[in-house]
Image (cartoon, rainbow, N blue to C red; front, top):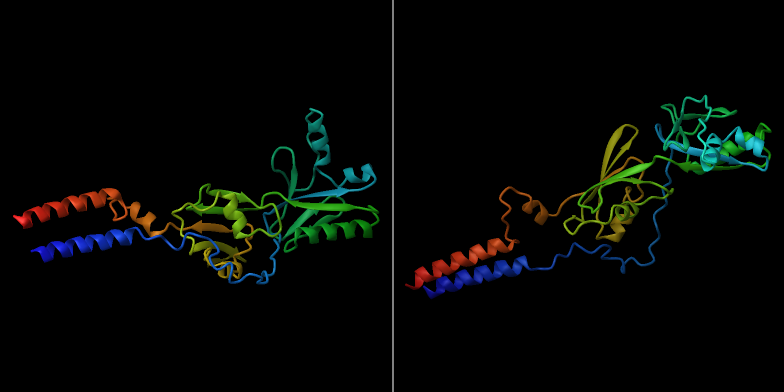
Amino acid sequence: MKLIIKCIYILCLACWLGSCTTPSNVAYFQNAADINGMALPPKQQLHLRPEDKINIVVNSADPMLMQQFNLTATTRSSRSLGATVQPQTTAGNVTSTDGMTLAYTVDEQGDIYFPVLGKVAVGGMTRHEVANYIRQRLIARDLVKDPIVTVEYVNLTVSVLGEVNKPGRIEVLKDHFTILDAIASAGDLTISGQRENVMVSRQIDGEDFTYFINLCDREDMMNSPAFYLQQGDVVYVTPNPKRRREANSAGNTFNQPSVWISLASLLTTITALLIR
């Protein structure tokens, strides 16, 4: 009889110790010291796609020349003076994004319609390539002698969902946008987020691709094709097993105190009956 009681207590103690073990998959970059000095992967720049929106500003020493190329100049200056002036535009791909800034929308053929120059093929270009191309076109046609062309993204976003503190759409504001940038903008992962299996969903030429990244392994993360994100990517952080167990209808798992209290009460009752 005593042997049976002892076995029951040993079994309970082993289960309790197992539930108290420290998880090893919480800290990021656990092998960072081992790969110190490793070369970074080639940076992947964003390339414009249909439905992307960009803002193009041409600066020149001649203010009169600037006005015919900058569709936002009239609106910005008028708003700063407290007046309301509707900008006059004829291009079909110019849209207002915030009631103040006008943006060029890349059409299905990868083109925009720029003042004076007409149709400009920008699909597949980076913003720096677009700026350099428009600058060369302006100079070649002797429209502006010393133009400074600036191209900025307007609506490029990625979505971060799942076990993060602030899920939602994250605005892409730089050329080299990594998964770490997206996670930081989403307020980091919750303690229940599975760091070894972060999913990135991406569409390339109409086809869906899925990548899985291990944030605990710095080398694995940096060598992933999805380390540098692209516009429209969806990052999903799956819940860890503990979180999934807590989400079931009963809600009773071995990691909850109520279960252990109930188990201890049951063992006490069994022991009392066996001693009699």
